[in-house]
Length: 67
Image 1 (cartoon, rainbow, N blue to C red):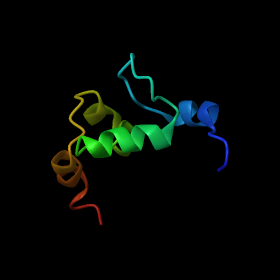
Image 2 (spheres, rainbow, N blue to C red):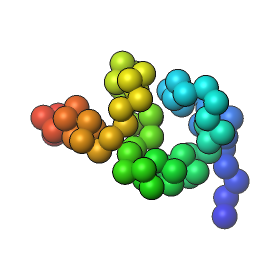
Image 3 (cartoon, rainbow, N blue to C red):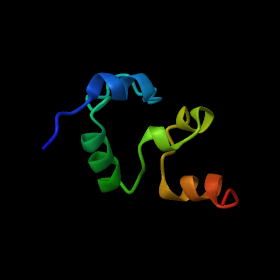
Image 4 (cartoon, rainbow, N blue to C red):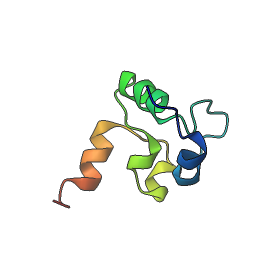
């Protein structure tokens, strides 16, 4: 397995949840949110990410007409 590029990932991470231990470790972040039927912060615009509504329903609402 390749090494995690945590420092590079942190530079692009828009997650505003400060006590998060998964910041920059995308594989852990994705796995955690998927178990919760959510998507990670990086898939949402900043204004939506700040609401912490990372549900699949919200993702679809945002992007359904952008195809």
